[in-house]
Image 1 (cartoon, helix red, strand yellow):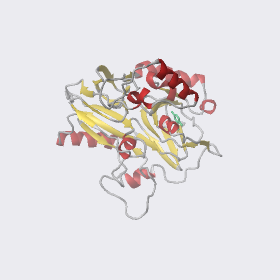
Image 2 (cartoon, rainbow, N blue to C red):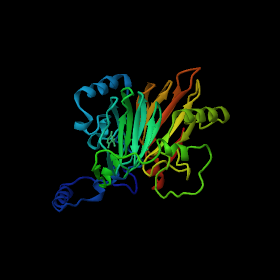
Image 3 (cartoon, protein in one colour):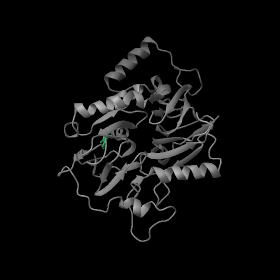
Image 4 (spheres, helix red, strand yellow):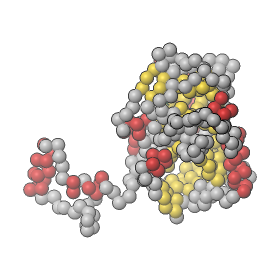
Length: 356
Ligand code: GTQ
C-alpha cells in the first residue's frame, strides 16, 4: 500500500507513531499519510464487481412476488439487483440502483415523488403505463420512460393488459450519498390525468423538429417516453451509414430534444447496436453503467471477465473497467440498452477515457 515513491506516503510504523495515531484517534482526527494512498489512488478503484444477472434466473422469482405481496402493502413490488461490492448502498454498480418491477393487469402502485431520478425500461407484457406529473404514458416492449426527480409518478397495468415486468433505474445511492433524499406519498394516492395521453411524444418526439413557442425551464427532457420502434430504426440507419465507434459500435444517446443534452441531470441513457459479427475494441472510462440486452445475443469482456448475454439479461460495467462487446450472431443485430451516471461525471469535469 505505501509504495516507496517520491511524493507518496511512505512512513514506517514505530511505537511512537502508533501511539501518536491512537491519540489523534481519540480526538476524532488522523494523520493523512496513513490513508493518503488509499483515499487518493493513482487511478479510480471501483468497489463494484463486474456482474451479470440472467433473466432466466430472476424471472420466476420476480413473478413469485405477485403472490407474496400486493403493491399496496409493498409500495413497489420490486426485486432489486445487488452488487456484492455495493450491498451497503443498495447499488447495482457505482451509485446506480436497478430493480425489476412486476404488476398484474388492473394493478396500480400509489403515486409518490422523491429526490431520486428514475427511469423504466419495459421488458415484457402489454398495457403498462406511467403517469408523470399528470401526463399518462403508455408503454410497450423496449420503451424507455423518464420519471425525473421531484415529479409525481405512479405505474400501473391496464385491466385489459397482461402481467408486465420492467426494469427500474434510479440514482438512489447517489442521492443518499449526497444526503439529499426526500420521499413523499401523493395526498390522494393517485393523480388525475390532466393532459392528452402520450402528449409529450406528440409534442417533442418529431424527428429533428421542435415545436415553436412554449417554454421549458426544467433540467430534464420534456419528452418522457422514448419508443423502441423509432429508436431501433434510427440505430439501424446509423449503423448502415457510418462506422460508429470502434469501442461501442453504433451507439446513440437518448437526448433532451430541446438541448441535445442528457435526458436527466444525474442519469444518462443510450442504446447501441452491434452489427452481425461485430466485435468492438476494448476501452475504459470513468462513469458506471447498467446494461440490458434489448435484442439478440453476444458477450462482453469486463475487467477480464467474459459475460455471455441474451435478450433481457442485465449486466454492469464499473467505472474505469476495461470493456468490449461482441455480437454472437453473423446474421442478426444485437442491441444493448444502458443507463449511466455520465451526466454527473461530465458536469463535474471527471470524464476520462482510454482506448486499447
Ligand atoms: O417506482 O419510483 O425500483 O422509488 C425503487 C424505488 C422504483 C419508483 C424502485 C422507487 C421506484
